[in-house]
Length: 243
Image (cartoon, rainbow, N blue to C red; front, side, top):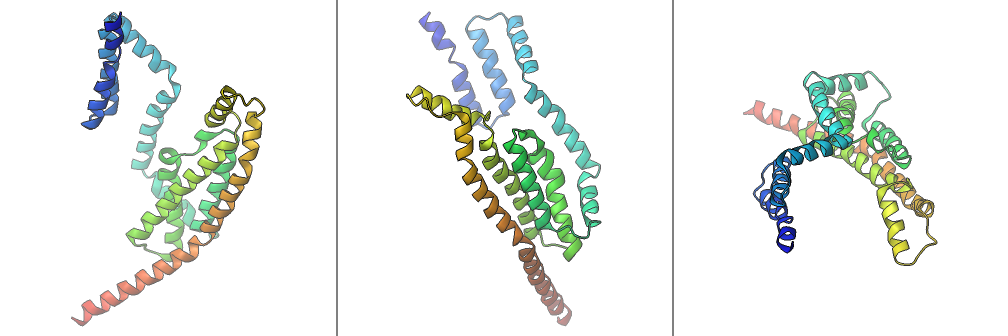
């Protein structure tokens, strides 16, 4: 019996070695599961049935496997370009305003528990970052690569900050429930999830105001950086013509 308990842990070194050698994580975890099941004496067909059952019950994994290829196809057939063209047609749209609007909406939706409405693969990369860059292109023309990367970084930061401080306001969020359970296990029974969510409001408001202030200065920063880059390009062109 003791030997069988040790065999049940054989998957751990497989995972450690596989990750250390940078093998495909999905293959490493699958192999570890198969080896562990066979080591403890599970029937091979029962093991495959268990894998299939757990895979089908994991709806989030199935959704990711369906969504990511769809987003890849949309990008290949011009989703980013269409987003940039659409933003260019809105005269009042600027990079800062677009990111501020997304930040407020993302934070409000996260506070309501709608965590999957945004995200890096499904929203930031294919839509938000191209729209923010398109607004800057519409105002200033061609942009230097460093500035384009900084705009994309600001778009990613909007999603990160809004989600991080917004989800703590949702009383059914895992971290809130974990803190409540931890306090109760240690004899503190007076703290409820609603109280933890309410105490997160001041921090969330501070994060909202600070990040909106940073984004409000982004348009002026972009204008200065583009102007300096254009001046450098002009000097370089003049130097090349003189030679």
